[in-house]
Amino acid sequence: MNPILSDEAIQQRQSPVEMDARAFREAGHRLIDDIAGFLSSVPQYPVTTAPTPRSLQAKLPKNIPATGADPKALLKETWQLLVGNSLFNGHPRFWGYITSSPAPLGMLADLLASAINSNCGAFVLSPMATEIEKQTIQWLGEFIGYPAGGGIMVSGGNMANFVGFLAARKAKLNWDVRKIGLQPSQGKWRLYASVETHTWINKAADLFGLGLDSIRWIPIDEDQRMKVAMLDQTITADRKEGLIPFLVVGAAGSVGTGTIDPFSEIAAICKKHDCWFHIDGAYGGFAAALPELKDQFRGIELADSIAIDPHKWLYSPLEAGCTLVKDANALTDAFSFHPVYYNFDGEEETNFYERGLQNSRGFRALKVWLTLRQAGTEGHIRMIREDIRLAKRLFEILSETKEIEAVSQHLSITTFRYKPADMDASMDQEYLNKLNQSLLNKLQTGGEVFPSNAVLNGNLLLRVCIVNFRTSLSDIESLPAIILREGRPIHEEMQKERSDVS
Ligand SMILES: *Cc1c(COP(=O)(O)O)cnc(C)c1O
Image 1 (spheres, rainbow, N blue to C red):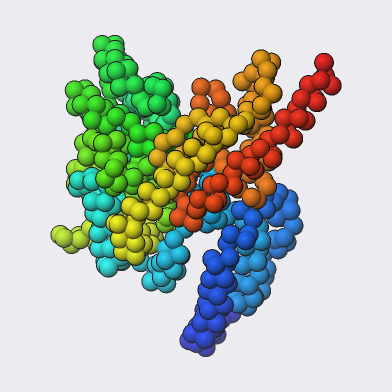
Image 2 (spheres, helix red, strand yellow; image 1 turned 135 degrees about the vertical axis):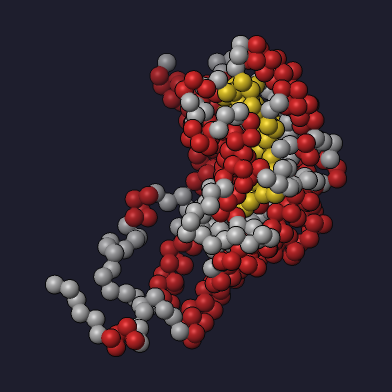
């Protein structure tokens, strides 16, 4: 039986998701108060309580409710759920992976963006938002010294790299790949990246039809930079065999150790072999703005495309990534379609749905644009510089600590491992890896500090990456004692197990 709705009900609708101004204000003020209180006391929280999935499931409602509830009460309950059971990358001692502390203004910007709810797929649906996004893209290029002809905001580094990859695929594959697709007989295309490249490249080669075998992994030197002589040799040998090189990827801050590949040399090789040059600057791209690092980033301006990640070193709350391209047409060439149901044809209007993978798009640029204005280029340069300085100080402190081996230091990433004082010949790589793995697990669940890991030459290392404007020297100085306090008992336990076995 169909339920009957009276005309009255649809004349004066009582929508259960609507909130009147008073209810909205009350719930909103309360939430903002909670967040402000949290922000001013975040160092007093554990970095994480490392809860188990099962313990969390027990805290969630059992069923989807048939009838609704009061928004204010829901927000209050949800605030407690999240603040009591989360990992806080805004904590001064969070140094894991590459996730930054979120800038508070970015939080408010996301709220504002949601309130206007601009659909940044098309100009007519997001007039001011589209112009702000265009300006943000232009500013990001200027900030890092990259002459961008265009670009697009995306959800993060993976997506930003995918956009560059697809632009390269369209620009360099010399048949109409957008019409006839990737033909098996064309399975000769090769791309080149250092062995340290982030896994986005595996995903891209797989998902976008080239296949994993199309990736040529170029070895690294003792500074973890791509060996460009090997790059040239590999491309030359591939061409001799009838294979077709089309893309080279360099890293502006590799994900493991933060190294910067030699861009000028790579660009020259790309030119020689007619390859697209893409830079993955998801982690370190913004450090190109520092005058003292200009030398290391030399050649960044020669790339055909670059991926950068404001939710890393610009401290945007998740999610915010960005692709910049040199050629203004590169993105529309790769992505544009004109469906009959769109009336988006203004000559001067930018419609971002034509420039990337998404159709409807949120207003990610707002938080980036506002934070750029809040801190200015000088403020951002200072924060990045301080993060790097802290990572360097950490390296020095660890180098001076007995039982700790400091291993690498690039940009704001420092790697090291715990190495017991009574090391003997039987404590090989395998033993140290196991010891440091257990230590890492202990640290990541302890709530005091949060490092992550890197693997270099088969050695499992602890890794601190500081993209955190809340971290200060005293936070860094606390680390060696924590490593020794947690490392020694694990070592003793492992020794005991060994003697029990033998
Ligand atoms: C973080 C990172 C990525 C992936 O970026 P997401 O924002 O996590 O999608 C890719 N490359 C490098 C070098 C990175 O550091």
